[in-house]
Image (cartoon, rainbow, N blue to C red; front, side, top):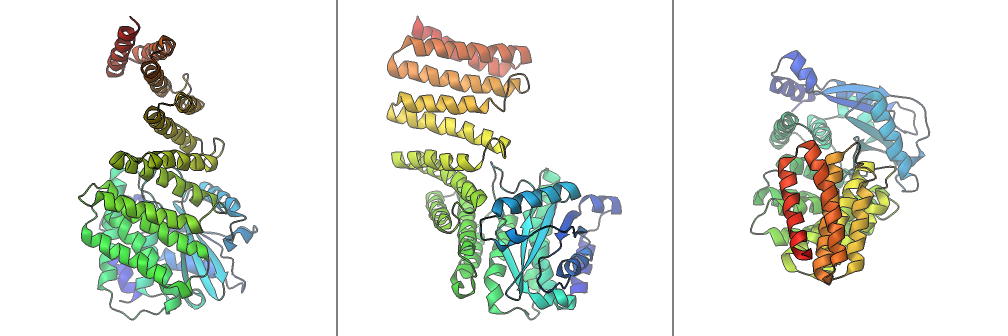
Length: 445
């Protein structure tokens, strides 16, 4: 299928009024590529993307050092931070970076808040698409199938927020996949590029099917990622193994979340592939390391709930501690706050299971950390809910130790929460807190 025919098909697909079509466009910024030949590959690529009616394209050509694009890990913070600045200043949905490497161009895709938690399906900034250099020096070399893949990557990478955006993305990705499946034209890239293409196709398929994964979807997507992994002679750096394993883990974590008869097997697969990804994406790539640690924590905790394996619960806490080191209060305040709350919950479970007062106190400390973000003056409801969580821990400690002093602490925390609920006229929350206070009174009396 010629590229122009492909674009015509997309235009016909977008049969909406012009004003509405503009609202549904993706704002794409192409950063001037780091190409040693000074061939203006980035500008040429931006011009190609402008032909696609789905994209509003901007070319960003300000001069700044781009040594971090070598992906060696030493300057990865610079990579993330520079991209976030450009995303903010250009009001873009997505950035496309380009870097010349051994006669090829590597594309990487960045969105705002790429590594925040909680999250579901995510794209690592390390996920790369390699393409021949001559594609960019002679734009006619781009086939419709390759442009569809790039189109799919952009649509899949930008996270939808509203239900309308989710439906719009689902429709577009379904259409892109349909066009790719029907494209029988000769493929113009050699085998060395295929693992990266297979990986990206897997992510596109997974993004489209994540809410309704079938056994057939899982088989197709698994095969795409496994094919990428099997092409080891064409993988330029170990981190790409990490990316492919990470994506396999996301496939099985998504499958597990949909609750089927195979849930426990999907859970075990997700744990296995995240552990494999960790071998290649270590602390030199802190955001990916922290993201993997967060997802491992969630999965270990779920494994504990399935099996009562105490080590899994300990591992869940340990992995959250690793994530906590990456998601700092200064850089990721909301993610840090969420992790502290989750850590409080996990530590409470571990403290109760092991009858450890010290671990329960650590849970209280984590919840109090949350209140650095959820201050009473600004977030009274959230602050009160945390007070109630702390009160519940003291109540559990009081029962566990048969200690009235813990019960008195519980009463104080419940009363402070109740006072806020009454001020906010939160009747259901107030009623629940009164029930908890009654339990404390019954115990003390």
